[in-house]
Length: 222
Length: 256
Image (cartoon, rainbow over all chains, first blue to last red):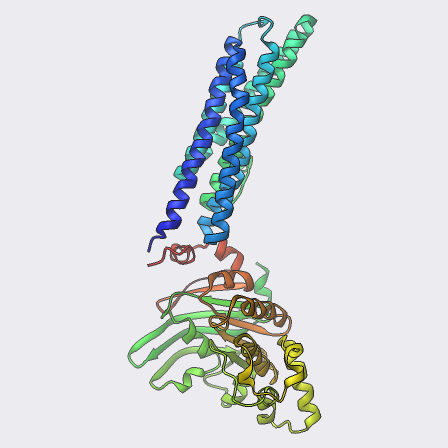
């Protein structure tokens, strides 16, 4: 016998999760444009738009608490809802980092970049894809896709190390680049953290499906 | 798993039970660990209450019942070596779905069992009555009206009286067949709290239709379906990640 009402409520929850995920992805897309073109207006939109992400977090959190209180879900249902509660926190953090990067973008808008940005946009693309896939994995309860997200995190970490070394060298070579290099290091660090948050989401998806919570590192160590 | 270290107090092996030609239990095997609460869950007609009754031979009272297999209590087969069913039911007491106090005073309800078992002195009986009512968390509510008829108590109080009546004959095991299904939430909570206290000294096997109740109070959960045990496990595991899809379907309410 299907639990029609409860299933509908779970579907609504998933739709809102996708909506929140899309908002975060959209912010990351704008962040890419703003950073590349040094567009202050777009950067400001991201900061304003973050309120909507925060609103979605609160909305989904409330939905989850109501479902827990009124439907008393068990087993996979309980895991779906507890995973949702964890995932929205991760998404909210990703949204915050997009706003953090937007703020730095505004700070840096006055001066031309010391060199064209290459690796940082690649990092943005990779983390955006990770966020997209992690939410997709939640909705489809897809462990393979979640594992794929965990694997991608290594690429983002490698890119971060490369950007960091390059910027350190730049500062050593020419102290006049320090201001901008420091800001770019912050940006790449935020991106690296975004990758970590997406990985956490993927780990909660795996918990949702399998009942076991392992870190991505543990999964690959096996 | 450290549970293997505990000798089971009750051990059921390959039990088949028939009501006439109808087979109600199929090849049921289960070990009950002492001083744990074991919850039996499953849809109506799955055999959980029938199984509960085999543990203290309540099915003897049903005509046309045949039983194959073994029910061991302290390694003694209760259907072979135990000749004294009264003694067995003293050691394995039972509480039913509907509170069933005797139509007599609160005091006499509790003293009934000890009297049957030969205790006559007033002082000894008074002591048993008080101790049993205290253990059943009922003493404070009834101590001033022990001579009143037990049928004047509320449903929840009556059920705790029935538990006190079981405790009065110093059992080792208490079987509970949906003990709270006729009670309001507060009385239910009291029985649930009580079962946690009783677990210190007694082994409890409880049949419940209330899944959340099984989740709240039991150490082990046993899922019955069509007369068979589908899954047995630590309650924590059964409610978080059951092994069998049928258990998952039942506890998430998608059964059938």
